[in-house]
Structure formats: structure tokens, C-alpha cells
Image 1 (cartoon, rainbow, N blue to C red):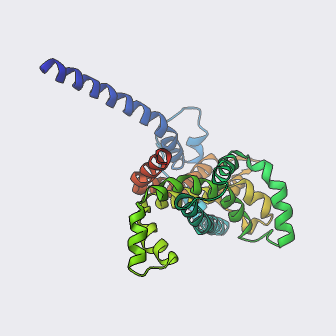
Image 2: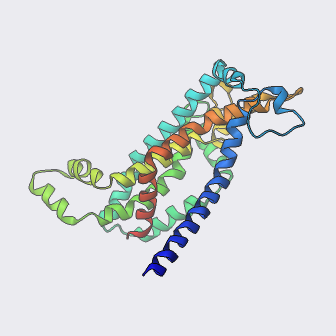
Image 3: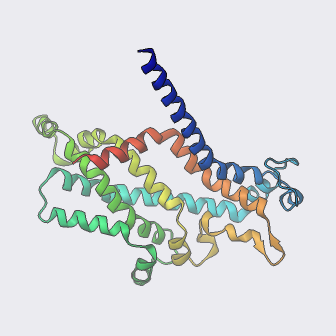
Length: 280
């Protein structure tokens, strides 16, 4: 018995060490990003490599936070994220509910189409979307990029949420009808709370898709005042060199919402992705 406990203890210790090493490998680039953002220009371009800021300064952060164009780009990034999230939820959740709860003619074909749609590279859809948005007058507005991003997020939402809706007991629908609930009220009051974990996953992923977008925002919004944070990081590169500490501060600000979302909602994200992947 003691031998078995000793072996289990050694296995747990080995697994913990491996987990710490893996975490260090993945977190080290983030640490490098943050520590350079607090270095001065002299130390950043110095010949001696340092793993922490010896001349601690917040000037790179102040350069970003006091720049009017930065605040405009920050607003645009939030608009992209929230609009993408809203469009994805508005169209993806009802579609997933319909495919999960009802027998849809050609449902397997639709599901396969959604899976294929997630594999298409953005460069393949840019030209047709540009022509469509040009006809609709969406170019240079806040709607073009989120609609294009949501076009890729909606298939993911349907594929992820469909198993959730399919696993909800039919008795809940019957009980809702007996209580006098119509289809819409039953969907909002019964089904949505029942798949809350999956919906939180879709909320986070779709928001991050909009927040991290670069290619659609650069293509559909030619004006600098419409571009998000991801499209304006180049401003620290000029003929006189690259201000790496300012770029790192800019990048740190860009990843803060991503890190916070995963810290506070990681149990929903991991649980939502794994549950949606195995249920049928």
C-alpha cells in the first residue's frame, strides 16, 4: 500500500513539474512583452540583455494612453468585439436551437457546410465581401468588419451549441407548454438558461474574434479613424527606427482584455468547448 502511494506521489510530482515547465514556456513571451514595456529606450536598445527593467519607466505607457488616436482605436476595437458578439448570438443561437431540437431536412448537409465554412481562409472571402459591402454602402462604417467576422463566428456557434440544445430533455419543452409558454418565451426562459455554459463560451470567443481582427478592418475601413488597435501598432515604426518599448506597451494593452476574460471565465470556456465537442 505504501509502495502504491509512493508511486502515485512521484507521478503527481512529475506531472506537476511538467505542468510548471509547460506553463513557463507559454507565459514567458507574455512576461517578455510586459517587462520591455517598462524599459527606457537606452536599456531597450542596449548591448547587454536584461531580463527585467533596471531603469523602470512608465513613459511607453503614457505615450500610448495620452495619444488621441489610441483612444479612438480602443473604441473601435470594443465596437468590433461587441458588434461581432451581438450578431453571432442573434443569428447563431436560434440556428443552433433549431438544428438541435428539430429534425431539419438536410441538417447533416448544413452542419457539414458550417464545418467547411470555418476552414475557409479570410483572404478567400475578402473580395466577394468587399463587393457586397460596396453595393450595400457598408464600406467605411462600423458594420462591415463585424459582419464579416461574425460570418466565421456563427458556424462555430452553431456547431458548438447544437449538442447542448440536443441534450436538453424534451420534458422541459413539454412542461413549458403546459405552463402556457409560447415557443419564443420557452426558448428565452427555458432553453437559454439550460445552455448557459455554451453561450458564455460563444460570447467570449466571438468577442475575441472581433477584438483581434486585423484583415477585415484594414480592408473595409480605409480611414485611420475607423481602424482598431490591431491595425495601428505600426505607428511606432518610422524612418528613424522602431520604438520597441512603446510597441510592447501597446501590445500589453491589447492582450489585457484577452487575459482577463480567460482568467475569470476559463471554467466556462473549457467546459463549454469540451462539452460541445463530445455531446451529440
